[in-house]
Length: 324
Ligand code: ADE
Ligand code: ZN
Image (cartoon, rainbow, N blue to C red):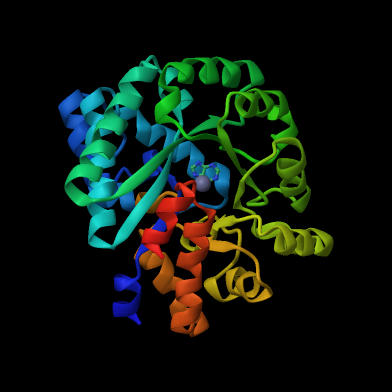
C-alpha cells in the first residue's frame, strides 16, 4: 500500500504555502531576520501545536508567519514545499497564499508573490512540477481590504489563476464577499472558498450560489443536507478534503469518524490534500496513508482520489491527459 501511494502521480489542490513553514525553517528565518519567537527550539514549537478548533490553530499560524520578511524567505518556504512534492511524486499543485497576512504587517505584496513565483518557476524547470497560484482573502477582515488586495493582484494577473476564501469560517459567511468574488469573476479569475469545514452546510450552498465557486475547500459538513449531497454528486462539484487537518482541528474526533470514503463511494468528486502540513503532521502521502490505514482502501479507490484531483484542477484540458 505504501509503495502504491508513493508511486501514484498526485495533484494537490488545497495547500496554504504559509502552512508549510516547518519549525526548523521558522527558527532559521527567525535568526536570519532577527525576529523574536516565543519558543526555544523546533521541538518546543511542535509540542505547542495542540489545537482545539480552527481559531486556536489560526492564532498560532498567523504568529508563525511573522518570521517571513523578505523575498528570499518566501522563495525558501515555497522551495522547501516543492522539494517535498518531488519526494512524494506530487506532479502538480495549486497553492494558496494569503497576501493580507503579510501586507497587514508592512510586507509588500510584490515581495510575497515574487518569492513564491520564482520558486514555482524553478520547480517547473528543475523538478518538472507544474503549479498554479490562488490568492486567498482572509474572511475575518472586511470587504474593503479584500477589494484592495484584489486591486494589488491585478499587476500580477497572469501569474494568479484564481481567488479563494480562508481563515475563520464561523461568523464570516461567504456572502460577506459576494461583491469581491463577482469582481474577480468579471476579471476572469477562477474561484474557490473554504466552506463547510467548521461552518454549516448552508455555507457550501452560498459559496456555490453567491460566489460561483469552481471548487469547495473542505465541504465535509455537506452531509448535514441530503439535497445538497445529491446536488454535489450531480454537478461533480469538487471538494478538496484534508484528512489530517480535520482531525487536528477536531472537525472529526478521529479518522474512523471521517466521512471522505463515504463521500467517495457516493460518487462525489472528493480529493485528498494536506492544508497546512507543517502544522497538521503530514504532507500528501501521509494524508493518503491516514485514510488508507483506517478504511482498507483498494488501489482503485486510492487512484480515484488522484483522478478526481486531476479533473478538479485548473490544468488546461489538453494537459490533463498527460497526468492521467
Ligand atoms: N488557513 C489556513 N488553513 C486554514 C483552514 N484549514 N481553514 C481556514 N483557513 C485556513
Ligand atoms: Zn485550508
